[in-house]
Length: 153
Image (cartoon, helix red, strand yellow):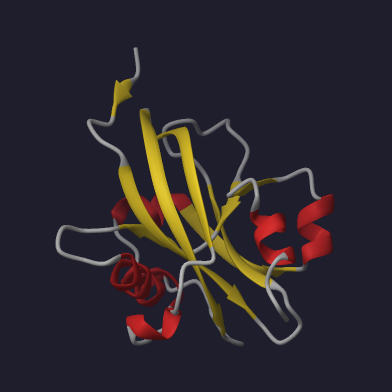
């Protein structure tokens, strides 16, 4: 039987886009299911007690991709998600908000990752909207292409 998270996991995530309109995604593997295929996802993470969604997203940007910004620079929410998923043997229900940021040089910032993230995340790369729409790889959120299509270049 799966362990179940006791509450809804609240997250703040960021669509980092470059001048070409591509989005930067991180690739992860589930350490609890090593045979499960890798998946791609947006930088961001759990909102800690006392943090706003913007503060959490800005903190995660620094930890995961080495971008230091003022949380206010993230602006307004551009999308949401409400999903259930399984990771590392635990089932979660997650509610998230997304922000957009233009930046040309994010990179995987291994020194900023916690132990579980270091076991999970191995690379980051730019994806075009066409690549996201055509790929058979798993990308989270599942509606990422729709969110990107709705943003101005």
